[in-house]
Length: 507
Image (cartoon, rainbow, N blue to C red; front, side, top):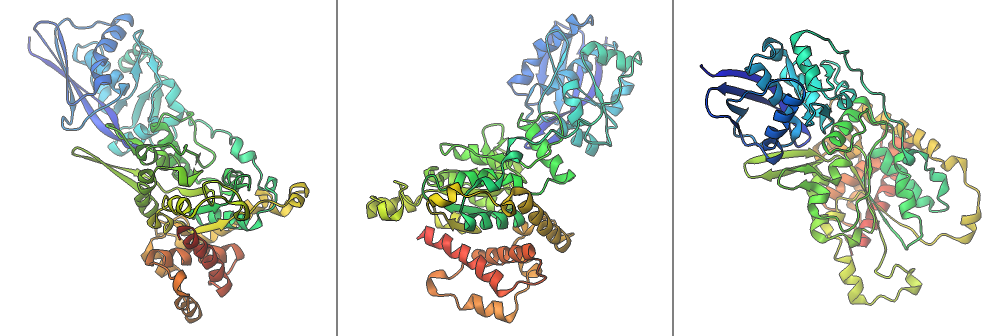
């Protein structure tokens, strides 16, 4: 008896994207054996036992012959249990239990239980996007993942409950309904936090509004209890809602990381890792690269509380993502890119004891060692630095002002972002913070008065090339908030004031 070959399309997760994999199944006479080749990881190798049990418990036949499964292309490492369904269906097609013709236009993805039921996995949206790019009109996934995968309208998503149902579908005995996109999940607790709850700290609130309007990085320096964490946690409430394309990006990343709720996200992410987080935890890594905190905060906020307590290697690992908006990880012969276009908002005490300057007991050597934890190259990538002092008792009992509510501030931020979208249309940048040096010089013209102001800075406040561009971006954002078509001198002065504050911290 000659060998019988069947091929089934599935996908493996690479970074936050998916890559097509052909599952080739060969069945021929010989001693019973089940061999998996094509660089599978341990979870895929264990699929042999899951597939065998799932077929038998579903009332289907498992061939007592020599069975070889190849995952092509062979040079790509494959990981995860999402190959179970494709392997099982490949066995059915190779043994003639289901026809092979429908498999040419349908991709499969899902993990099997021993009873043959399909279990939810991670990365359904990434798989659906991969199926669209590969030209597959249909995609079969577990029912729990169908709502997320159906966000890709060009692909007909088929929710399959178990292996028996998949066999009936391929035979033409049943036609499951097409899955509908799951509605956006309701906003979380961050949307209910109001900026008006923070008493005093008007300068910090202004800096927070500028950061939100332009997507700028920000550092707050102040004693404990000044309101740094309160301000940072209210930042998502003044950011504009994500567009559909941004929401798809955020949903895809959360799905790949196993954090997705199955529906399109309705708000921007807010990540606040502990200061003991490793460099791999912040930027991503491990033997099978997974997204780090800066990627999970893509198109949202990465809040680094107690910045000076983070390990120096972890903070230095953030330099490249802050500059380029992406993380490049190389493992062996693989190079994977993670998106990392996040706003970084950090908070730190002015000294180890955290007391106000008139009561600080820290020695000069201790202060110098504390300041060295924040490297100059890292601070050079921070756009706004503001100092917070202790809140006066009168401010704590004063009623909140409606003008400072999150809703009012958010309206101003949305209006400023709208002006930026019109100006940056077709450039790939979504806000001023996304601009690189070349785009900054093209989109932010500097007249003679502003050029003279920049060239007359005193020696301690001299800007680096990167700092010069970042000052112009912040000034452009301030002008957008005020509705100015061009940068005024007062806009530049305000941006410089926040920049000089950063140099003082570095010193």
